[in-house]
Image 1 (cartoon, each protein chain N blue to C red):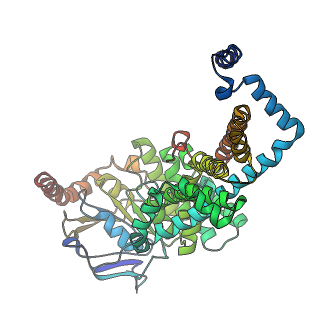
Image 2 (image 1 turned 180 degrees about the vertical axis):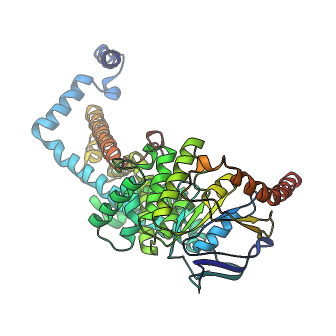
Length: 260
Length: 254
């Protein structure tokens, strides 16, 4: 049974149809990336999976059960700044366990462990504004993973980082995922990132009424190094096949942008 | 170096005042005499007479500040989180805020008497709105990602209120501390001046009735000193409470 499944999901905001009859699934322990042109409604799909947004029609299933309200089995890594600025890194990571009723001491201990695992040991006392963009992303990752969610939703989490930091974070994400296989739904507009991380890549159509157009299984060997794997012939071949589909949608989105 | 310039400037102004008063150029009846003013202040502190009045003025200030802040936070959170109530109450709030509230002092004196309560009431009306509007703004400006993130981390409605909305709102309250403490002080002194039986404002009112301009100036100087001490206290509290904020962001207020 799929960890996360969309069944003919449609979302309308007033007269505008943002998502039009999307059906796809993420298997247990599977790393699935969704790519699509900018502004096609990728983040809307994640908000549906998170339960922050209810579909206008269709269903979102979590472990075979229709989702109503917040998806308690999912952790969400947001694109923007989601740390609470008034809490230190450690207390941000401790927030989830605290909300769940864990004592402050135990929550902080768990937070320290995870800060160490994402490479932030010794930075727990820092407030978000005292950290770099990369450090804040790490703290966000720890904040999400400390709750050990079976499903991980990621919304272009590394898009604001510089290339080096980004590849570092991608590799760390992969090694964490390798150690504890969560089901991942990863949204990005970067095709290379999608291929190098995923088991499967889903291509979305240009908006409005976006929906999955095609799916590609990525049979590249693991464990992977995201920087090195990009140089292999197999990678290039897959990229070419996917780009053939994606390209048309990107052009469509571009023309819509020009017309608007 | 700067300090030297400052001291020099202060000496120059005081000296000019003194010379003017001695020569009769500045009539001591209207402008007072620096030496006599100083003598009044020294006597106040030597006899200890001033402490009772100062204590009352400060107590009124703190009570007005505390009650105004408490109600402002409560009201701001409530209306910030229920847009419908806010829509209904909006014109009333605007009207109450637009009203020149100092003019309420005589009414409060009738309602609450000449004691501490009427002074606190006036200070309250001044502090409340500053805090209220800051909290409203704070609630509205909670970043949606932070809010959604807290929800995804499993926060219940109550936990959202306590761990997201309240800290966000309080950051705005803290950054307007200078203004609201100042307003509480203004409220207390003005209300005392308009009718009271004790407090520094009362001393000034009494002296004015007897054309004792030296004592009026002495009262003003004591109040100014007190205001500066309060402000310094606020700065200390602020640096403790807002450690999480980048410095440039700390100067908000109305």
